[in-house]
Image (cartoon, rainbow, N blue to C red; front, side):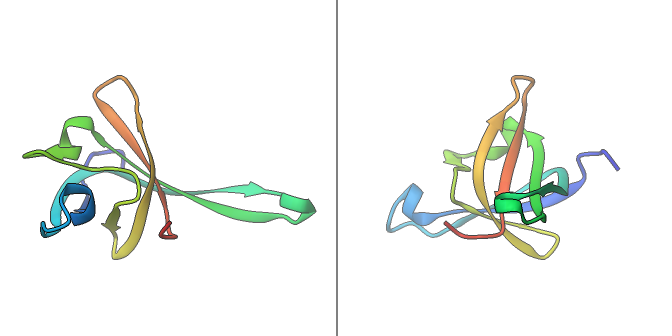
Length: 102
């Protein structure tokens, strides 16, 4: 509905923070979009999923823990992985997601 009311739970990976550290879960409110785009690789038409999550840039960092590329995020009972973070210059960030790890 366009409001920042969709919860996403980011898993801040121990390997990124410290190999001995436990994973930190960070819940962020934002807007989830699971749009698709039609594409034609090698002449075959397929529908590509382009999941994205828009949220406050400040929400992606807490107590020294920062959300980064490759980390897992749970939205609507589905696990996604962060493909890239796009800061929009307005205090908001678009988190580009993928359903494949790595």
